[in-house]
Length: 251
Image (tube, rainbow, N blue to C red; front, side):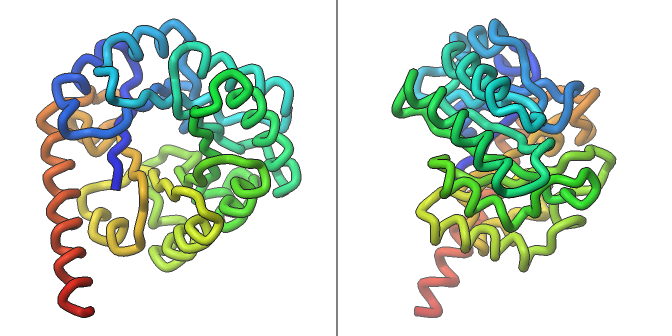
């Protein structure tokens, strides 16, 4: 399981650099503009320059409306600025066909510029609260659009988390469908250390966190701390070892 950490500034990215050995992807977002709020192109560029070359930089392009052309341009801006993982929050898409329409534009814009870039179609575990596409539709949306991964996050950051809106069983089904499509499955949404056992067992490929590695667990006012990143990774690795041992023992 890969660990994706989301700093909201160059200063926080430098704290991530201090913990670079413990993380896999540095994700640039702007939390005050939403769950998957887009940061400025120059911030993406500065973070890319600050992060070790072997660590991919991801960038969110926003909790986007159903405006395929607008979103395609935003995605191109992110990849031109140095991001190689491009995440799109399908906030304003109310049907799977709308979501596919948006993501096809993103995939073309991004991969015409950089074929090896990685495109993530992101939906929301609490979709029922905002009226967007059903979480379990995301794997098929990602497949039909040519995306590389499907992701679930939470849209409303009010203290509730991924499993408050989508059960572990439903998340397992999301992962299963995503893997059947030949894609990677990413899960986020106020994920905590206590969720790692479930996320490991269901085969999650990428786990995204922010609050769990911030002071006081606060994604908005707390700052990412290298020691918290290291501690989170230690628990990830422990769960991975235990899961591997259990599978081996059962076989």
